[in-house]
Length: 121
Image (cartoon, rainbow, N blue to C red; front, side, top):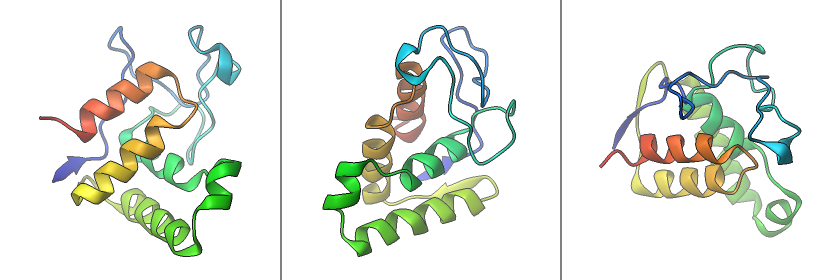
């Protein structure tokens, strides 16, 4: 399935989330979106979100995933980050992305918007 990875993640008001942005509705993440692989203040895109959540492992994942699983996540993150616009993803890739994004500590609105973009049907 082809997915445009440069889509901006928008809040419920329709404004794009911005990296480093303070969020009133996210008390568990110290009120701000984490600094991503770009400059603070740039729009949060599906590309940045997916690459970051694939690359970040919590302690439990780090212990239970094999080296091959970690490498697969890393290679998919690199492939996503290197894409100019659209990327053709297999169903397995989409399942993994939704798992990683869904288990992240991002704001629930960020997760919901990403899920809509990863499963546009």
